[in-house]
Each structure stands twice: as structure tokens, then as C-alpha cells.
Image (cartoon, rainbow, N blue to C red; front, side, top):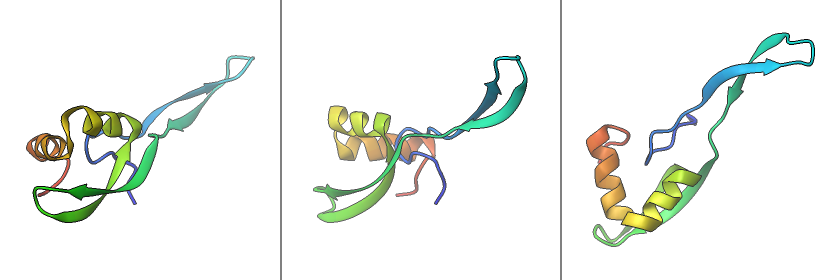
Length: 79
């Protein structure tokens, strides 16, 4: 399972752990992902998506159908 949100396109970033002595080692900032099932009323079916917390807020704000259309237009998912 890739760690990419299928609605917002967010994915893991890289950065540094910085110690007290200012030594830097590489680390990853992972996305806050959930595997959620949604009922898609327009298609009359259940779909399962990898969605970040930001993606859930987007779905709550504009609706599932509009969020899926925006994600497909940006190339995050294939409908």
C-alpha cells in the first residue's frame, strides 16, 4: 500500500532529525492516512480509498463526488 492520499495527493516528505549536538540524520514525515469505505450515491456502490485527514475534511466540505472528480482531474486516481 503506497502512502499517498488518493484525494489530496499528499505523500511522505523527507527531512532531518537534529540532535542536541546538531548532528543530522535522515527521517520521513509520513502522511496521516486512513483506509476508509465510502458510499458513492451517484454510482450506487461502496468504494475504498486511502485518505489523509486533510482528504477527509475535503470530502466533508465539497462532497464525495466532487472530491473524486477533482482528484481524477489532477491525476491522483483513475475513475
